[in-house]
Length: 410
Length: 201
Image (cartoon, rainbow over all chains, first blue to last red; front, side, top):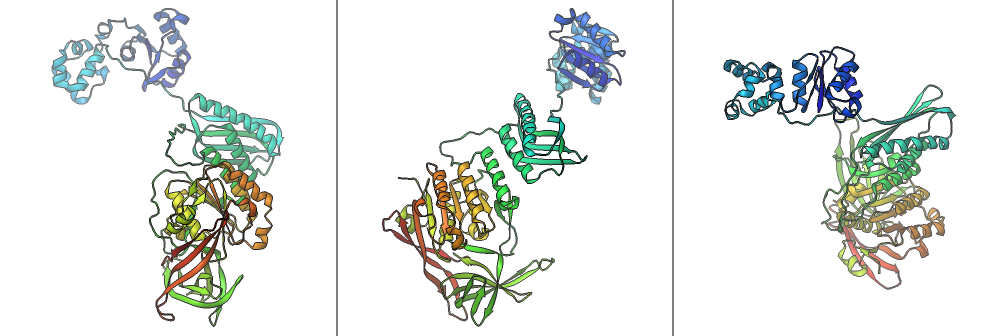
């Protein structure tokens, strides 16, 4: 059974009232709310009692209608004032006197019905099914079913937006990280519990620490895959707060999780091994604390001719096929970062840690680029072999005329 | 007999079969002895098989351009730049091995000063050996001298064999590549291979 409440301009009050009776509440239109009242008879008695209880709770003049389907209740609530109970099986008879305009037909259909002299639900319900289908199509059939009170559609309940956020005010300001972690562990446990209740996981975490000096310290942690393990979260937050600690004692802690569908993986016998995402994330966070954030990731070549140009991007495990190796072995270069400043005198090369006579040389390879920017570069490259057999790539900067060793071939 | 990780170099794989998984493998040699070219071949084979690899680069010497040219799939490579600190490299390698799941973890100490590399305690090397044991990960260490000593179950010594030039010296000389020789030092069964690596130009 469904109850429908209709009061122009009072939708917020109607929804609040409906939620007092049932968790399944639909906002059917701008002035109407429909709720599922199955089971309420145990609390309130007959459907009349339920309707009166709802009307009383609304606190404003409201039309209440009860029917076996939401659409019949909706039309009764909009068409009849006061309380209406649509008898089961006699919906068509009950709704018969309502005007067709209540069905909100499309303009073309409304015109056709007016031409035919169809003005009430009864008139429309009485038309032959096949004739309506042939002349008015699918929409006409739907309207006729509504006029007969025969509609069968599920209720579309309002979903409250999900917020996975927990916060706690501390009794006294906390300076040390360790006691703060106790609080964070509890909050994370609650957040993860709520995520689990909704069969969700977190793809990101946001930690907000309110400081004693009225400031705020906020940290956001982005996860590579959805996770729901409070221990992993706690460790990640701990490592992050070690690197970026708040500047004043903390008086309030809040944690918010950005929810996402949990990761589902189907492993196969022939899939090569890969690190577990949770473990990898923790490991990368730990390594980051050792070597620094910018020194961990995957190298990516930049679309430029500038020698040695690359950028670091976060390491992500993707299974996308990106091509294999079908080339003969290429000679590797070991780069000197930054390039070693060198002196060249009469075929003799000297740089910090490298000295020797050049016995063979190939070049120059003249390259330049970015001349349209302020980062213009131009250089002459040489491949050289020193007397001790070591092979280097050297270059002369065309703008400054200085020599550098870019790297050694190995 | 441990599972072997092939290098994709025919002569190398014929002589040694590859680099053993679950072991510490040492690639030793001076500058321009082919250590890095061999490492890139191993990485290219592993990443082409869709395995994820990690390179712990103690002296920030990795060149992504030549690695890509050697066939390394950069998207499957985790690069950790330690800015010249051998201590950071050891710590990062240990953490990666504890995490597990990598097909190959390479620690490049090739440009670390011998005096610094000698100061790495044997206990640290044993720790790495214990961490990689009974795992499908191959730990490859690139060094100038054999500092891993007893902890390395497989050791290769690389040397430059011949530098290939073409053209006329002084006017049209071209650097074609280098032929390297690799000789097995451990386990003590005589075996060697000659590999050729071609210049990028």
